[in-house]
Length: 153
Image (cartoon, rainbow, N blue to C red):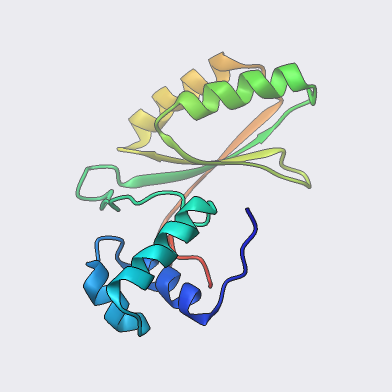
């Protein structure tokens, strides 16, 4: 379902990205609506698939998951069977928090979150055992400069 977003819809979405637990009464006041029209707009945005879920964001460092690794994967295989196998294997690994197919020199990019180098080594061994890969390159994040889940609405 395609819908046209007006300024109020966009304000609602920006506020929900900041805090999805905000009370409808508070959200309605922030965007200049009463509660029922505000709730109806949220329902419409959800039904249209614009709001896809509501989650809790966790501090990975407090959960002892301090190492972020960007894994670049190149392959000589570009057939659907290989892709299905690789996508299924990588997606099933909880350490993979983001997974992209790219254009350019790198075929796939995985963002991996683990406790430490030993945990990454164990992950790496599982990854290379899952499917044949031509080249795997790992870049370890030294510092996180910016991280957001908010889209620029």
